[in-house]
Amino acid sequence: MDYPLVFEANREVIKDTDLIYPGQKIHIPVVKPSTQFHTMTGGDNNNRKTVT
Image 1 (cartoon, rainbow, N blue to C red):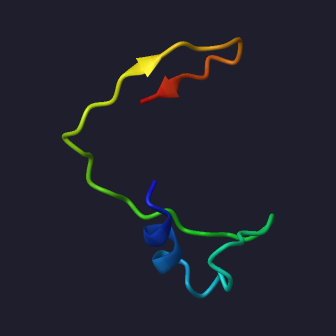
Image 2 (cartoon, rainbow, N blue to C red):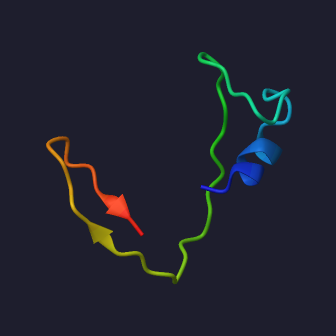
């Protein structure tokens, strides 16, 4: 996610570009899918993957 895009969509909520506080309700903008592919590797007991 592109943080500047999130900040621009939430200027009325996010007052400091370095801080998002618990309880703040922000909007995550919809972004068109990229044609760029990423390789997923590994995984742990929580089924998290590393994206490169």
